[in-house]
Length: 383
Image (tube, rainbow, N blue to C red; front, side, top):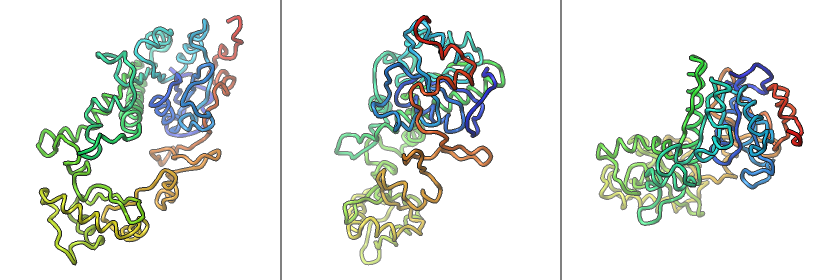
């Protein structure tokens, strides 16, 4: 159980202590989400660095955290991490299966010191199964789940959705859900547990609705042939006169009717019925031709006060200035870096960006004091 002490910041997780064993990708993002929500996250960095290979000052996934440096391969490294684990509520690691055990900081060793600890394990393939010991990245994990195969044009290779679908949706968010559920159980029963968050499991879980539609016969197991994968002419993207794009999601009939009216179709020309899937290609061509007659900004003005479910496709640099996002404060500036603000939002315990990316080792003395772990500040020599 975590020891009472100083917990910087505020948010619904204020008072929760988290140890993050440094890694890249979904683990750090999951820890950032916990930190955004108010948890006191201590990132255990390695001597010599690591991470994304960018200046740590720009690694937003380390915002709202504190950092200490521990060499887990040193004689005293294991003891330093176990001291932290003894005082933590949650520990997150993203090593291949068995690595944490070999380093002496696996779940058995940590929970021997702290039976209420929630030990979160973030991997691509999971802790068991034929591929568990193998290396991998987001694209391979989402490939085997069927998710990647759904994305893109029918006559082209599957489109790569950055690493959002696997690492962060199927990985980080499931890890956070898991450790918070386990924390609730631990506080009710006094019993911690291990959370095995595998990207393949989370990504497969994200496709639950699609599998239901597949079983019902309302989803075809191929790209660009369905209501939500670009096969439908009123759910997709269209190029405008200036080479930009508009996104259309006019699925319901009343929204579709407004979409067609504002687009100017069906007045001077006859178009196929929306329900006539056999003529969807013909309808798509008519919609595409209309969008090509105006620029993205012109079409944005046409649709912005409607329920036609149409929006401009913006770039990363354009998005923060969108009027709706600006009004909500969806993005924020901190330390000269424009970045997404914490989400979701809470009425009683609002979250915030309290500090910029943690610099490796910069918080060792503060953490040693606040968590009462004097071993952290000892000299390396003579340990």
